[in-house]
Image (cartoon, rainbow, N blue to C red; front, side, top):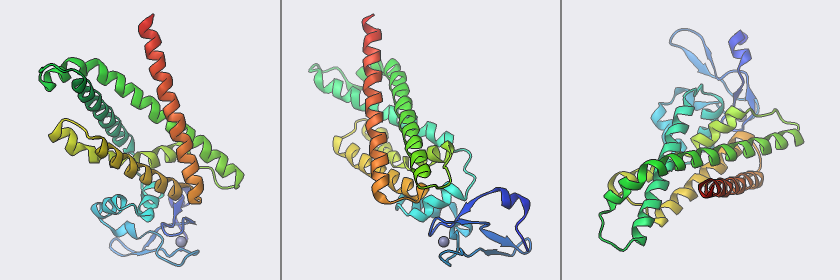
Length: 247
Ligand SMILES: [Zn+2]
């Protein structure tokens, strides 16, 4: 019994070892299916086929590489761009809260914080959204470029831009940890931001290692190069805005 034509078009990956498999399961009837074993590691190629989405999300939160491989290669997660827009808006909003609370701390008068926040919110939010979109795009483009170089050097199958974008979006869900502060506290502590940044960076390193099937050292080099370029792009954007303001 060979795989159907549609299965031939699609590439799947064993979540345990990262090697390609032809299919994830064989369907014998409407209610009977058997999970495929990987020819390389002899384990079940993708156990998550039978798992509930909540368990997959828990494994993602627990930074399980197998769960990342499942989401990146074995699932049609077409709406990930909606998730990336939500993450972008949340990041811009948290930046806005941070800059407005810094502004409030500088002003010594007794003006209520929320009034001050509303006054500066509109324009600044658009500016911050644009700046976050730019730095995220820069991060993905640099990471994509480095991934192509790595694949070419090791003669691996090239990884497309969408997969790189997907891996970065999924690994940025740690930013949702900012939600409690944004909703109830209306201010963000530096220590909270540091914890979230650390967790997000760890997720990105893990997602990149799962995507490229590369050594951890290369993941660290690639992520930090992309991060450095993102910071440079942000500085350039701020300088451009300052120049436009002075004209
Ligand atoms: Zn395997």
